[in-house]
Image 1 (cartoon, rainbow, N blue to C red):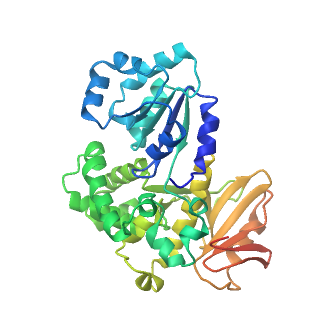
Image 2 (tube, one colour):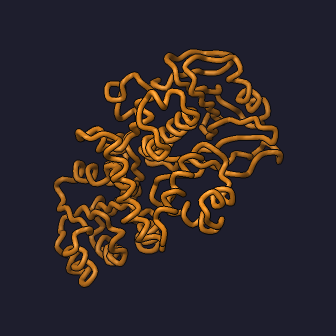
Image 3 (cartoon, rainbow, N blue to C red):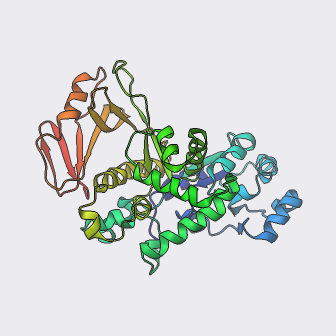
Length: 380
């Protein structure tokens, strides 16, 4: 197992909460992490029909088996179990008693909110980050990183993205979508997913997205919510506090794994990617997802934003720090260009709150200062 940065957070939460919940997309390493850190506890998967039937028909006796707690995998398959779990952990008053994992955020979080409020420490686990993989596994070819993404299976097994991603997508469509949506035409939904991949890094226009896929804006919104609850995409909201009113209020759409995005776009080799029109969007998606992973692994909410005014000036990422607002520009080029700091310097001049030194993350090497900005290569 590749060491996960979230391990420290999970161990910390185990000291203060009787129940731990690990959510995230399928195959992101939730079960592996839970079993690695809590291997002394019994493990039960509620995907197992016998165990699920037992939990559904006699939840009290099902839980009574676990005198020292347990790791309960895919617990959203039996949401009624959470009410019984509340009673048990309240009686025991023991921290780190049960560890729950689940892929469908909506089902699991609805049950946690209703039954386990105040009793559960939650960790959202996305695929491997670049920091977890390290330079040795990532290599020096940025395009290879963009094609492969961070799903652990691609690093733990002898399997290529070309073999793994199509099976992942088909499994996701067959299992999760059928559970969450009454999709009659899976082909149409798969087209919708591909259209979302083509729009990663762009302002979200649900009406246009629906038209391109032959569905209504209402259906597009519903389908997008399923992609979000399954941790495949996220929306980045605009930052407009203390910047006046002439700013966009439309969110941007991002995939949470760049390898999956690349596969959905039909990209299969580095030569094609090197000159592809979507390369900039792929790199931007990778950087944004890395920032999200960093926060999730620390047990924090993402709380990332972007800034864009009505004349088209845009800063890709903005977030609050104790020292002030931090702005980040993302550029896929490998050589610094003199016009890169223009938008972020304009943003800095308009801010009424304190701002940190602007950062530019680019597709080249090194780390240095240019025109009042900290410039960092993608590996740095």
